[in-house]
Image 1: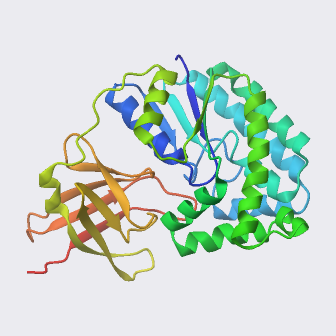
Image 2: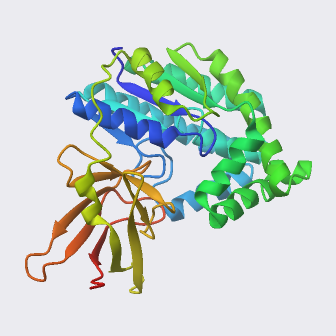
Length: 335
């Protein structure tokens, strides 16, 4: 497929970022120039806000009824993005951007569906020069899907997701609260997403993914995009176990923290790093030194400190809207 823009959509936790990262890794292995813009990445070329402060101003505009001005600014950003992407020789991958992003903000503020639809249709017109394509994940059983998301992301994320619903104009006007209110909210939103998907005229692929059979889903994506499957980097190399252990680092507030790298079922699992979900897998690259943090735009490299002869963990990557994930941690000597 001769596309310059791959859009990946679905509700939170449906696998958008994991799939965007998978495609990015695959394109890199095949030698394609590309850029994955993670949905929470600072400086995202489509977003009308550039940092936490401007994001709050956008929220104020939306909650105050000034949503048409926000839509206007968003369309201007899409116009500029399309112009730059058309001039570039890169393939751009975005997750949660076409059916997510602004629609996720318009919907909870009770913006009429007709105006949400007009916005998305105008975006489609703008990006047509990029020959865009769309991969859309959905779940028939949203209750089970939301339970899995909460179990994966932890109590802090659950609190945020519940408040996002119960404190929104949409949730307040319909008395939505608690887990059942959150399920109802996303069920109603999915109705709109399904309608938008049907209206879009670009090449598209819809996948019901509640079973979690990602090898099968990725085979469908390979066929859809017309890319070779290739061979994945080995993720069960026995010598990776040498990186396991507890590591200490100083966080952005100057406080001492401890994170862990565990070897489980042939994989490295990290826990306690800044900006990283609990118990997140590391995806090895073919040199077995560099790793991608699963579902996130961060890279980790393990290096042996030549002076102190202990292992160090270096995490680098782009800044996110709520802070940086850059970190250097030293393994704690337990011997």
